[in-house]
Structures are given as C-alpha cells and as structure tokens.
Image (cartoon, rainbow, N blue to C red; front, side):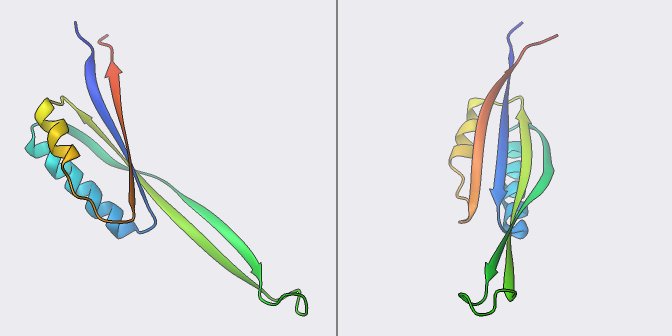
Length: 109
C-alpha cells in the first residue's frame, strides 16, 4: 500500500486571540476542501523574562521586569488532496503569526 500523506502545521504568535482565529480559519479551509483535521492542539506557552535596571548606576536595586509570551498551536491534516494544499497556500493570514508547514509520510501498518 502507498504511504499516507499528512500535513503538520505549527502556528506561533504573541497574541492568543490572533492565533485562535488563524487556527479556526485553517481548519475551516481544510474541512471545506475535504480533509480530516486533528486539532488545534495547544502547546505549552514559552515565557521569556527580562530584568532591566531602572537607573544606570545610582539605584542598583531598582529594577523593572518584562516578559514575552509565545503561544503555539499544532494542527494535523490527513487525507489531503491537491485541492486542499492549493486552498491552504492561498490563505491570507493576519500579521504577527508565524506558520511552519511540514509534509509527513506515514507508512501503513
């Protein structure tokens, strides 16, 4: 038997509302094209914290903290056709969203 083709989409953004809207748009597009969708699966949020001195050298103990949160989602699309891939490539997505698309081959058991 031929190996099954699977598309894995990983979405990253700093804003959780934008990433949820993007995931919903991708899922609706894939389902309209006749593919099976698994997800969106929320991945752990990556939190980066930065500590900065408020003053240059006088008040050493006065500090300010900032953090940057990166939200991630994972979507798996199976039973894809050429129409599915074409409709996903023609999507216009909002700014501030990073998308990583991988084509995977699954061997039948």
